[in-house]
Length: 288
Image 1 (cartoon, helix red, strand yellow):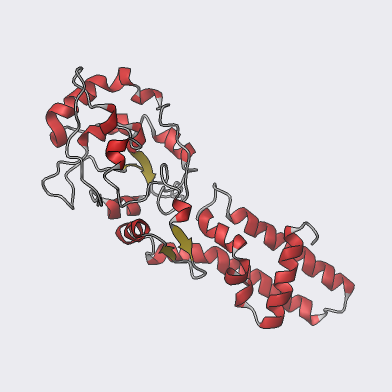
Image 2 (cartoon, rainbow, N blue to C red; image 1 turned 30 degrees about the vertical axis):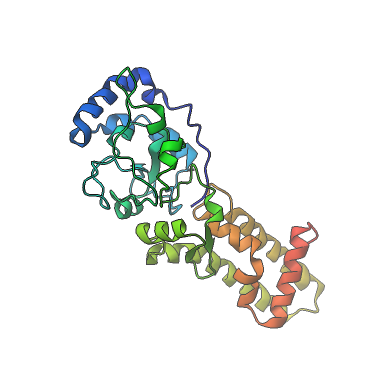
């Protein structure tokens, strides 16, 4: 999960008030019995959400476009909640731009209609004289909704990087209670996901081991030293690319780069570890 920037005051054309006003009044009358229209909340927002989330799930950072289609997901569920059976869901937010994220089918399925909060839950919106939901009960960063103290992290609002850390084995750990709840409920340490994150690191370590093996066979040879440095330069550039937002698991890639000792160098015996640390410092200073 990484923080993203969404212009809350600039919804897609398909969610402008001129388009949704009548629909929202119908939602307020029918509540969770409303026949929610994917043609509005999904089809009118999908392209924009793909751009915002770099074609990745908002929660696990997996790009699934080559397989299953990513789903437009409601941060606050539009249907009856799991944690509060007397809550009809946040039906009035079904077409709200600030409540829509992008999720893979697995994260979306795990999240389902769950929405734990630490504060007082909002059950229904106050209405304006025009009969629509008051802004304070609609915008995700309003004081009213913020006071619910949502347990799930939201990449559009929270600085999620301050809540989560990754480990060299591909697992993710929470630094806060909210992070731990998000990880547990969405199963962000599910085996295929951990394996996919670790795979990129495993490949890098394997490449470095091969470069070391070739170098140690003829380390006194100047050309061998040049090949070793050149090879490391290529691998280190790949580590830099791991953290680019467009890539799968870019936050894991961030830790591979900024925690190089823990994630990479520590996988080697002491002398090799010191050599790699030295080479990586040279790389970061553009001296490799």
